[in-house]
Image (cartoon, rainbow, N blue to C red):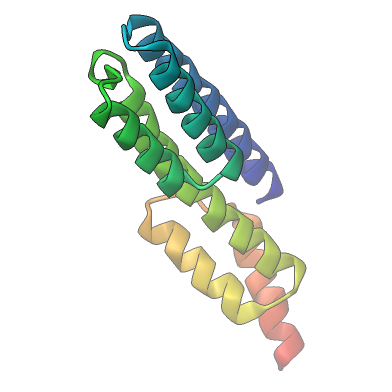
Length: 137
């Protein structure tokens, strides 16, 4: 699970960088007053630093409302994909934490969540479930 989590975190970092590149493309296309561009950049930077994708999405929407031509880039597609992958990273993080805490109920819950998302759950998780059930007996 830790390996999957590391891969998922790496993918999310790459997607964040890709989103920043797409927003940079939109900024390059934008012919607005310098102050408006600086204020938009500042708002986007604050949103990205927060790490909250809802805030990032809201900042992008505000920027688009001000005229930033995000529709001429792949920014929205990158943001959508990043949101999905970030949710999956959270799922794997929760499963890893449940395993580390040896919490059988939490492991079972997050295993089912992963399966509901059609994710491939490593066989070690089932083995851990058996071991945790054995400890309870």
